[in-house]
Length: 298
Image 1 (cartoon, one colour):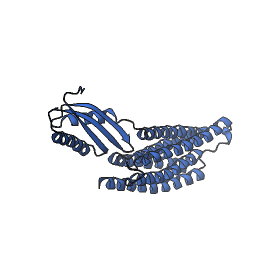
Image 2 (tube, rainbow, N blue to C red):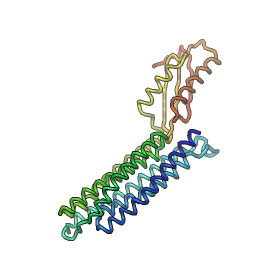
Image 3 (spheres, rainbow, N blue to C red):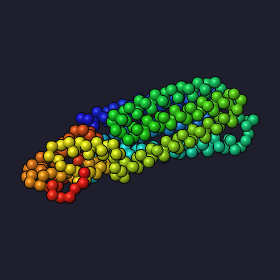
């Protein structure tokens, strides 16, 4: 039920931002063309990539929540990471294209031919900053609640669009003050913002596909929880590994060597249940019990 609820929330957020991105992209493209602003047209292209990103996120969330099957007995959670990687490549490509076009205009040094953008482009930039920042916080909150990698990537995509719109605003405003080259400079600033976000998304997705351990805060919290359980003397080994938006836990605990097999199983089950109750994102937990006379370290 929990996974179904998380999936529903993630898809709802993605659908809402998809509609918002379509409307915003259309307005920014119109404003960029009508007000003759290359920076705003570039910003609109970035927003268009947001539309594609939302579709990728929705597909990734839907596929990652499929039940385990014969070919995928461990589930499909890593498909969310695949969606994140695809999204990072799209972002990177869009960023490079925008930056290249801006550099071409700057290096041409034909500043007299650059058109001063109209006030509508300035209005579109301000509106975009407000809307995209709101989308960032809205999507980020849902990503934290669901633990969705793809949704988190989408949130930072919204933030990158807000940053690019901020660059557009600066460039358009500078151009209207009599420095038309700043409209092209804004394209390069937008490029740098987008490329950075693309690299961050890519690194995060790859880390979660290559069995990276959980961060120290999670590991320390797990360690504390296990040691709080009755009859657990020490922890011999504690390992974690990320699996999409979830993680695996393997723990070896030390108990009294005179404990019966039945009692040892009960201790292991208590530890297992405590971990899965306190950490909902645990996909699977394996608990092994060692007798007290085996050398251990806490």
